[in-house]
Length: 181
Image (cartoon, rainbow, N blue to C red; front, side):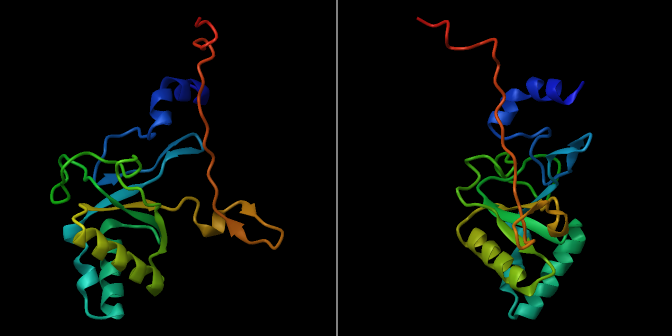
């Protein structure tokens, strides 16, 4: 199946939240040839986010480093609170209803960029964890940044790199509204 056939086959998924796998605590990166169609992501239950309670920034940094190693998180990620958790076989990270972190119901907030080797980013992650826990949100969806900063291709005249994403719509030209009275 070539790429165009693949997208036509999965067109309904493209219009909502393009996912090839059901929601889970860990979703692997999926690529077709050289095109990434799903970035790797992790759902972290609020019960695993208690690092924000540590008394000092150094202790919070140490705990986030442990979480990073345990989940095998990349250095550069995006994180956002999600209103629902994945269900299934991945206890202890179970929750109420499936969510892949990108659906409109998951949160109205944009994901936050984090460098997990940067203490200031760890403090931002601690704030997200505290807010999620205190507001009753089941957890955070953490998604890999891809490409990482050194692989970003969009640059300005000064050579600074920027993130970008392409979004597109698939149209079925065989079913148009021109035939309606």
